[in-house]
Length: 94
Image: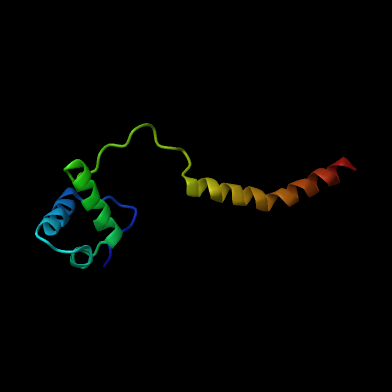
């Protein structure tokens, strides 16, 4: 079973990943042991090397109301509806 992508990993798991890295294990081996993507293992270790800790820091500022993905989806829906909107305007003018 894989851990969900959008969820934050617990501090204990992050610490265990760093401990395995410090004992000489590679990203692939750590990834397989904890069933976490290699990119996640790499980002945790990179953060540990950069900051000296593996915990998640608080995010600055207020969260956006729409994510980039949501914004793109909204634009797609608007572009789909645009021809119908133009047709309604033309038919109401006559």
